[in-house]
Length: 287
Image (cartoon, rainbow, N blue to C red; front, side, top):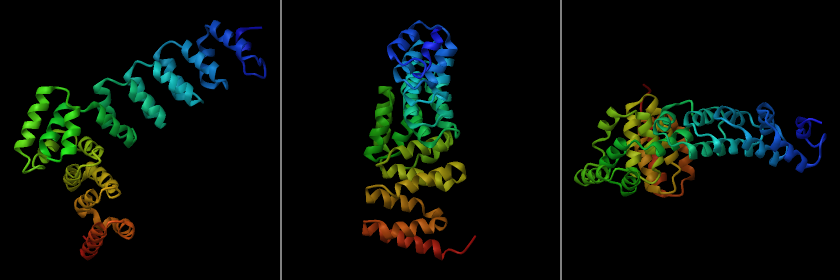
């Protein structure tokens, strides 16, 4: 009997130990690939992945594999960041996405993911936090005074001199925390800036920055509106209030959502602000 027959599922050979020994002796990569992608036995799948050589064949397992465990094991062996990025774009599984991110160190690949709308929003946000454009982080740090946002940006700046200079500028400009946002948006992709601000969940300064992007309109403005909508569900009422303030330009188009929030929000100040915003939006004449 051939090795390939020993490797067929249990209805042809029921002894896992025999199949495992056959797997260790097999050299046919096409059969190994099929075993990695399809075999019902976890140990056989894993042994097959271990025997495969080359990023391209491992990519095939990560994309075509029927079992998540084999796909994750294949990803862990891929050392080409571009291939990992392709896998994330084609198979939008959260566990697979995180496994790919654990392997990606190339800053250019991370930035490409952050800028590419073909990836889901979660992937782009994670990429933004990982590639952490140093100049952009320094500008974010200089432009806001909120401690949580400044700390989050400062922790990602690797160059000690750049971090110290940014912190010094932040202290000098803390009386006008948002004055640099327009300048930032002139130098960086507004969608990337929006995603980065959206990742700082506990900062009213980040919410104000999203408001600036929203007011500018375009695709980045639409994304800023989506992120601000999420801040309306934040646990802290002060964050929800700031999000309401920044969403005033699009309140008329969100009347139903705002009305529902006004009925459910646990904080009386937020409910009052919601009611006021709904009334203001309803009193404006149609454009």
